[in-house]
Length: 141
Length: 281
Image (spheres, rainbow over the protein chains, first blue to last red):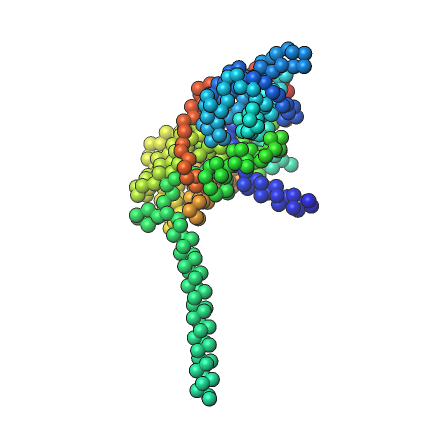
């Protein structure tokens, strides 16, 4: 792909992508720390402005640790295909793709979850959402 | 023989003209058909009534238009680059802030928007509410007023038509709106803002002197072209024009969004600052 094509596709993407509103991703989470984990749901908070689910994750030595994952509020989850108390429930085993919190605790920002039947759904927005993007809104010299 | 030739030539000319007329009529019919797909109110004005998704160009239902993106996403790859958000830069040209004001905008950007009013569950304001696609908005049009309902931060605007702003406006987050029709374009004049919203992008603050002129033009059944001209002589060097599109989302209904229910963000920001976790740019 040459530079002009890349720029055109980039512009096309910017024109077509819906723009989410969200609190700063980058203050709390690190886009350079993606993580994929599989575990069993221990709790789900369908809450505003963000929903959370918690997973018990067992490591190679059998040690279990509980992790917290943040994502969309209930109204957005409804539109991304979630039905409360149906799509995911306490006790379900799921896989989640997420980015870790900057403070290094067992906490991450969920993007996509994979259900036991292989179905994939978005639980949260992409990395960087709400933290201002790649360029400031004003020109800098 | 001459009569025959003339007759034939005449016939060809008539046929040619007829063909030209047919093409012209077809074009006119096409234009009329395209226009007729735009619903009109009984008073002849375009009817903007409906549920809309801002900052999208994709036609179809919410599910159809957002399936590939996962709503606000970047596509099938969850590890794909950052998607633009309502705090991202909105155009190739920077917002026309005066130098001192631009420094303040940059400060918010460098702090990754921890001072974003919406992080405190305050209303997102205008035109920011027209720069985000994650939450739909609804327009209800009557001959005398137009009501706009926004799912994000659950705010609304009641816009009287052909009215004047009140003399005793108290500054508010959503300001005071009055509308009028200029041909097929709805023009909304906004004033009476407080200084506690961001306009469109990280740190894009303003003062109570803000004045906005919005234009809504329904260009097809599926789409409204939206424009907001923002003027604030205290912070800008010239009016800032923001353009976006709004796409009809039939079958979508607005839902509740009570941000203050469980807002942990500010508390988390304070904790990170206290613990010295580096997150500034």
